[in-house]
Length: 507
Image (cartoon, rainbow, N blue to C red; front, side, top):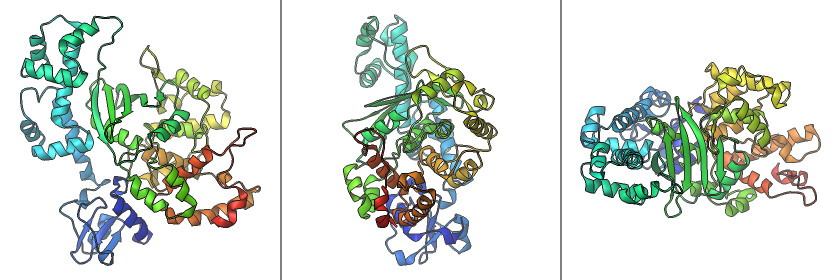
């Protein structure tokens, strides 16, 4: 991105929000100190006249600036060194899940991964949402619960085998984790009507309030994939696969604190950090809703909508490929794919992982759909071809959904897939990567009668949306929230977001 394309107004909005999605996209250089920083740097930049914006760290250093020692912009997202923190956490997680904190302290674990204990705790809270000791404690608790349920061993032996230092510690942790003592757990498990404690690791992910949880659940429920996702008013559940590790995800809102309760049930849990990162993006937990609402409320066209739906977040997607397939089938901000069609796709080509209730399937992989005969779905030859071309591109690594800091590159690659237009590509970027500054609404939402009038009005309208940057994605969501409530009383059909009579005001 050339330096000329950096808009200072957009940069200042991103800086004030401290939103990590802008981290690495541009940099702030202070001409007086000759230092350049990331947008999430904790050092305040109070004098706009002294700030210059740069598209890349290389541009800033070419201008004679040196990197900030606090935010280290040379290792911002996209740089090779950025991968280091995630790799450290993954290695430490594996050591914890192998029992390395049962007989030693966090200091010893930190020494093994090459850093101080304080920094390791900070990285765990950032990447996982729980401290190393908390993860180790939950591992011991669930190991002990299986012994309590399946054996008649004395509790003192169970405590020792599960890695607890004493029976007292064992009792305290079991009470804190399951809300019951070991004896109460064993008694309840002996009753056929009472299930054993849920397996998995629980982490709590905080967010900046307010959070419009009901709006998120409503949006996701309308677009849920049958057999893969199960969404209720207070719970989001789905099957997951992370680097071959299969399990289930359960997310609930904590009514007492500004956080989500996330239960992750995997075979090994070594990919917990990656799961937490996806959940944060899935529920847009890094956003600052007050900052976004304040900016969008400056426009009279959005003010009432923003006021009526405070705390709106971008409804993300767990898997980018799954979302892209649904987008080709017709999923968008203003429409959803029929549940019957998705159900047939999943049950014919997905992998069943449980014999219980939903969710019980994994979404079909790109490798499977690249060779699948989709004719039985009745979606038409053109869409069959488009899905296969997408699947081939993903299976061949021509398109990847694992690099959230290369959104523009993803969009350009998606546009090469037959049937994927700019609106569809923007919608995928919005939900798969949580892209905050795109506008995935179709021209048809303007309500113009002819294609020529619609195109002209659309171009005029897009020019007026520039004042919403860098939060155009949220503006689109607010407008679609308005659309969801505007229905014809006789037919129930949805009405255009912008009726033709409003065009003079928008142009």
